[in-house]
Image (cartoon, rainbow, N blue to C red; front, side):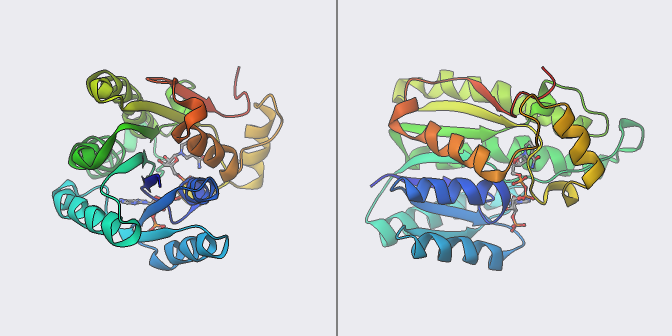
Length: 247
Ligand code: NDP
């Protein structure tokens, strides 16, 4: 059985990806940070649909915890599925922050850096021995790497860094046939950064060829697809999933 690990799988895009992967027959380890109840609800829903999932706590901003986390993942794989390897890793966990460059504090900059770039780098490094040869990595970035959006400069800069890192992962892990791709969502209806208000949503929808903002499943399906066999020859790409945003 294929087992995948999805960070930030308790809500939003990560929760959708967890459900979509489970529906395709994968065992899912999903992580949460501050909301264990939300994670438990996703696990419950996956079990109700006949799938298998386990939720583990993880602060992606705390790279010092990754070695112990990797040991816990190994135990969970063995205990829940009799498995020793992961077939997929989705670096999805994140948070939004709206603040113009003029007023961004060093603490805000550092916490965005830790969660959106340093975390995925060292978490992937820590989990590398557990990734099966031929596994897939999906890093969640953002359409803000292509379309400059005032107020999210450090976030977008680190997501851009994650897109470059994705290509380096593909380059260095290719000898183990491990693929790495980035998925760059446009505006998606989640709780990120406090969610969308009506006026903001209308403006974003008007800038989108398909005329609406995205739903978590619009992205979750793509993530699950990239981890599956149909997309096995797609490597080192950034796939924007935004309904045609600002084209
Ligand atoms: P949500 O706010 O809905 O969910 C965020 C998830 O990340 C939760 O599971 C949360 O855990 C987890 N999380 C937050 N901080 C940490 C942390 N420090 N360590 C570990 N886990 C953490 O956000 P989205 O689903 O919208 O965002 C998912 C990804 O998609 C992010 O990387 C985001 O930047 C990206 N994205 C989102 C877009 C959007 O419009 N929504 C657009 C472009 C990119 P918990 O539930 O425990 O708090």
